Amino acid sequence: MNVIDTVSWIPIKNKTIYESEINCILTKNGFAILCYLMVQAHNTSYVRISMKDIQGAVDIKDARTIKSTLNILIDNNYISIENNDALNINILKCNKNEHITFFLNYRQEALDNKEFERMPVDIFNKYIHKINCPSWCLLCTLAVYNNKRCGYAFPKYEHLQNILGISSQSLKDYIDTLITHKLIRLNQDKGTLYEYGDGIWRFHRNNYYLTYNSEKVWQDYINN
Image (cartoon, rainbow, N blue to C red):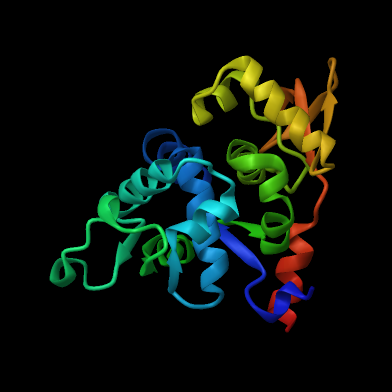
């Protein structure tokens, strides 16, 4: 599959905005659904799709969860529905087989923000069923925190818990899931000091190496 033929990446807002949104508004299911809508929209700002298709794609069993999550995305203007006022569409009352046109406000906002991370579409398509929504959310969080200068992300364990709103055991499970599927590699640094920023030295406890090359995908996209 040549992902460059459609859209090769999913834009994710910069660290500060992403942190506040993922913790307060988007939720892990909401973020995965938003990523799926962007993938299906390809290079456009909208997608026509049914809730049943969304449910199957992100592997959320309960249709009510899909509806309530979409409603949160609409209420917070991440997405909007075609002629919402005129048609008086209530997403909670829609049949899950009904096709609805969703406009992706988040995509344009992310692109307008000049600092954003890029997640390869093929990674989402290949792994979302295998790793589930929370693990995908963790992977995107590590991508946002990835320091290209040293080649890995090193957020504190407690900080990841706070961003994602999960327990220590859940975080461990999600990290193990990503390691099992070879999406990250974990190096527990026991005491080496590294240069970080402008002459600041910092101790890194957990170093998370992303095992895919999003920069290569981005350069291929530009060159084509």
